[in-house]
Amino acid sequence: MFNLTFLRVAFLLITSALLCCTETLFAQKANKKQTTRILFLLDASGSMYAKLGSDTRINVAKRLLSKSIDSLANEKNVELALRVYGHTSPPGARNCKDTRLEVPFRPENHKDIIKKIQNITPKGTTLIAHSLLQAASDFPQNENSRNVIILITDGIEECQGDPCAVSEALQSKGIILKPFIIGLGSTEDFKKAFDCVGRYYDANSEEAFNTVLNVVISQALNNTTAQINLLDINNKPSETNVNMSFYDMHSGMLLNNYVHTINERGNPDTVLLDPIYRYKMVVHTLPPVVKENIELIPGKHTIIAADAPQGELTIRVDGLTNYNNLQAIVKQAGSCPVLHIQDASNKEKYLVGKYDVEVLSLPKMLFKGVSIDQSTTTTIQLPQPGKLIVNYQVQDFYADIYQQIRGELMWVCKIPSDKRMHQFVIQPGDYKIIYRSKSSYKSANTFERGFKITSGQATNIILN
Image 1 (spheres, rainbow, N blue to C red):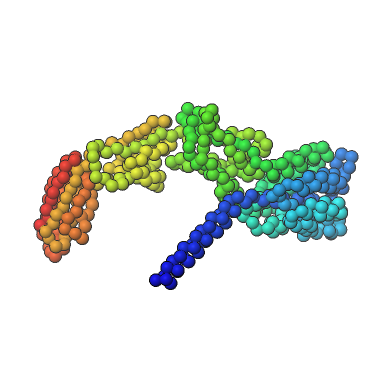
Image 2 (image 1 turned 90 degrees about the vertical axis):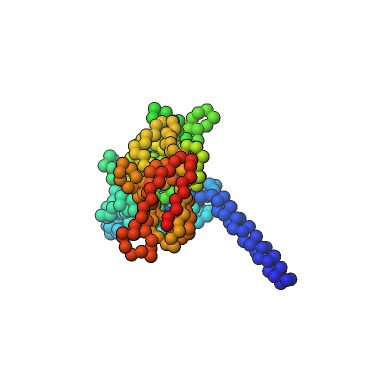
């Protein structure tokens, strides 16, 4: 007895400790803030010696980039790295592999990056696609991070690579977010070449470069606000209290969930979203509303509208019933996929439109083209069922219940032969039981019993 009691106490103590540790780990994970990792990808090809205002492009880039990196030294949950291309091979070598991670991600490496920037000497060619591809392995593998690339360049691809395809692939795999591209001394053709790579910014002067660099870093670090207007049939943002999921359009990764709210002033609430992403929003109405390619204006309040007019559907049964968990299959009118299985005891919201509703009573009842209207409740009314009690004297049988409708038999259900009595909650109407003993091998020994079900009443049938 002592040993058994001791084991029980020990088991309870160990279980309690494990639960406590598990809860602590979950709490730590939930409270852990996301790390933003910014990789500066700097063009050091020979053309960076060209003028930008009164100085060279490379000198302007070195000066302003160093200033920005120094300002990030005290930012929490931010890590930096530096990759450079076009700086290790002689000008005439045309080395299309000339890219190198000069300073990897690690805490407090700001001075190392600044020192490395100051020692860079432009030499070679422009290899953006290969540099982007190599940059994918520069980021540590960590699910709780935002991986951002800021590309600073004055030229387009010169090594027959496809920067657009590489960027798209890295975004689709969730390795990086949409890159920022700062174009120095660019032209309209230059801008078009980078539209597909990422979010492009012109910097045709030192002042413009300084402004753009600050804007880009701000976008990389901060969220922006958005108001989600769920519009009713009158285009008013009155719909609410439904979850909205926000996904990255490239990777499909789930980023945010917000249950929509209308505040005390009657306005849709404001939510925070990361402006770097291009979003797919799924509003979890029945059926869901999907809006794709949502782009936010960084630093500005963005209004996102989605048509989500809704009404309600309820199923009622007259009188007292013995139904246990009566359900209905709901589909969009004329559509095959099941949209929802609704409990008859619940009231559910659906988008305004037409629906086919199959109530899983005995027999099943199909209501086609049920109309759901804005802010109203549509009611499907069922008559009060009756009760069928089937007793049988034969040992074993094959038996089915059929409903008689205008001279035709419609199958309702089988009667199990596992016990001597069965009860069915069944809709009023005219029915037949058709049965044959399993011990009989002649079809002629098929029997049938007709009966009527009346609302609120019990009908007894004896099979012999």
